Image (cartoon, rainbow, N blue to C red):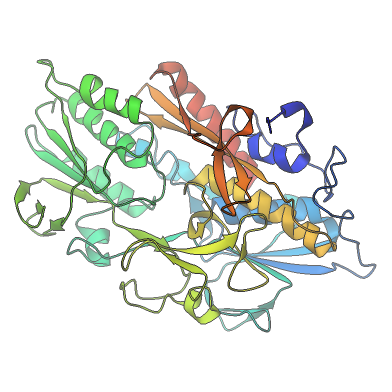
Length: 480
């Protein structure tokens, strides 16, 4: 069926409204049925309001892109009938989106911080600054690290990811010597400091884990910005070596290939970026910064090593990140029984969900959104915002006695800076595929057969300028 924007339901519009840069915050109304009268969702309307207060309690765990969006839109669409509590241990969220621009000095970590204050002041979300120590899915109770408990009718879990020890490194190495900086914050500042300290002729080595990982184009974007920074600061004889465990570039392959081969080059035309796909057996010495791969067959001496390790669904308050740990409250809740997908041995475990509502396939009443879920969508901040809206809409419908939209639509959009003044972009529309019960990319006409994401036709300054408009609109929609 062709996607006709003039006939999209409210639910479907949520999927495409942020696809165009500068679209701003979404216009919404607090009701659960579709604007166009489409009855496919089977809902009878908004949740009835109890005369003495909210009719339902929803707890949202995690205040990142997905969790903050879910809390906001549950209040917008649930109205006074839904009490929403957001549990997040940190007072502010630091955006991973645009964080690579910290490395070339175009942004600071402080500029990427967003508080949850507006969610409380403008939308009536109750904030709890605490970590989760346990979830009792049978009695529908969340226990916080201060010993208090929260009862819920529906629980939304948006824990993000945990980064696994890999390549002979530990979590302590990531924090102090070989930062992955795949969670924006102190490691981002440390990596920038290390890059700034490189001398002309030295080597920067970064690794990319097997897909799926957070932000498919992000590692290639980082390689470009590091190369651009080194060349533009008189260190053009440096080398950026990219060790990719995947068989090839995972997103925006045309534009990144062009960037590697013809944009980030020296005066003599030789490339600064040495991209090596299909690499296996990576090992890193955090002290000497010697990197080996292909079971020791190749050795690299690096001045800076930036390993992006494999990651898995996060379990807030889980403690150890050892690959053999119990998964924290994911395990204690039962979410890692039938609800965890083993993508590869030991690594890459994600929560399986019904993508029409993001309710866990293992534990009723628990919805998992954002990077932690396995649903067919890429793991990215814009996608977390989209998943949260599908989830919030479904929860309001369910609480009102209806059913989730049977055919949700979502959009994935992102910009990728290539230099300090140019960028590319990538976008795709996803539709629910009943055959696989997952979200699939839809091509023109709505077909999911052979469809793929669309990348920019070129790398330009215009794209770079639009990137900031898109980013500000997305963050405004999420946190304000």
